[in-house]
View: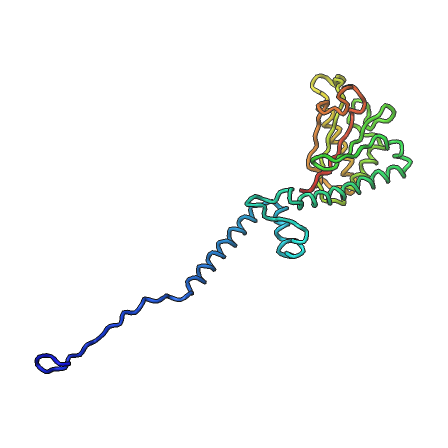
Length: 252
């Protein structure tokens, strides 16, 4: 084709091409970013949890197959591990069994020793929310403290020292409580009360416990309750209200 002057006409056709895509690299980078953020949030969540949760998470990553086989759920929603999933109960029951074995060993040692055989009826062991409680209770025929004082009798000192040797084998903390009956304390004047007497008796028990292998670091509290926690509430003056309670706390 030529124009009016005879010159050839050159036609240039421009083909409009699509913009195309930029490849999938950005998707990979975005996925890595989201994964990193998720990992960060999980780490922050774990750091904010208690020791039981951290231990459960650690056991999961060490052996996920074995952990799953146990039917444990370490992430109940967004809350911390609770006892409903079984992990806390399992740990508590295991520790409770260890404490019970120790209590049975103490009772067995006492029953085999003629020096303590007569005291067997005055020792009671039970489990409470804090841990295992061992109560050493006065009787009409056998008392552990001199009347109206915080001085332990020799046999009671030996008994408590042997108990302390057993407690020393465990990492658990110890709480010692002193209790009196409801009779008012009058011998030492109005400034001295059953609160003071119960506290001093609890402290005397502490001194006997740590006279052997048990260290002071095991002792968490020494409490004096006077007659505020009577064992026999129907008989405030009953001899069974005069007692020392030793609580071996659960570790968690």
